[in-house]
Image 1 (cartoon, one colour):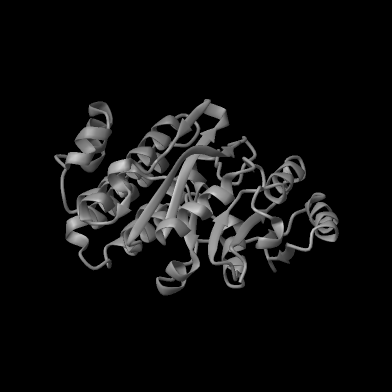
Image 2 (image 1 turned 45 degrees about the vertical axis):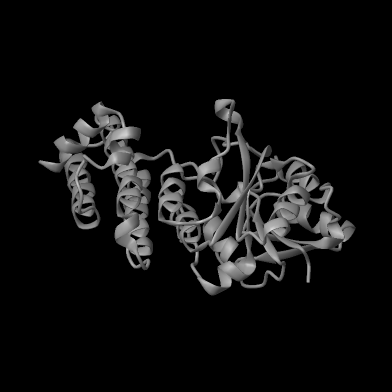
Length: 318
């Protein structure tokens, strides 16, 4: 068994793909101990040509291809179905990783038989480095720690996941959307019994304007937000012991609610008033179905600005 499966969804990434692949095959963990599953998602540029060239030079690279464009989520699902590594890592094709990332994450994982190991991420666009998993939320998990991790959020790409954890608690990524990893991370943070951390910045998140995680059209962004709100609720409310996690989950939904409202308000002048109002009411309907508590939620009070809370309360009355 390989130590690690690295999954790379690829769509029209020719500008950055070579840097990404070089950073993965250049890890201090021997590439022979990894399988690199690169999934071309029906690219129309030179991405497949680049992948084929690298696969000729590196036996650890396996190329896969979606039958239709399925987004990063669909590409990851295809690779996950065939991944055989002890642990699973994810890298986006326009990003890069530091050379010691997977060696250090794997060593940490083995040192405590951790289900998940997290590390720091550098967001290039914002010149910001973050480690989402705090010390007080690491190690053996309980409800308090799970709530802290749910509220902190985080990225799948800064982590490795024990494959056994994913197989015992299966969840597919949503396809052809952004925000598809939100409920995915939350789901496994709640199912993990132990979480480790390595306090180093390993992942370089480029966050380019052309990134598949970006959506610039307000109405398409609205659709992604509404789907994410519903997906977080659908995934999390069936979790055993949900009531003990409810405020943390509802904070995540309300955060999306706030993003959605502000996105539509910013689109005034681009779309007609009635269309904006219809979408605001749709957001309100999902919020009412998925959030049973109010804005006195301790996580909302601590992390969402009073002005944004006021805007949500205004939208609740539409």
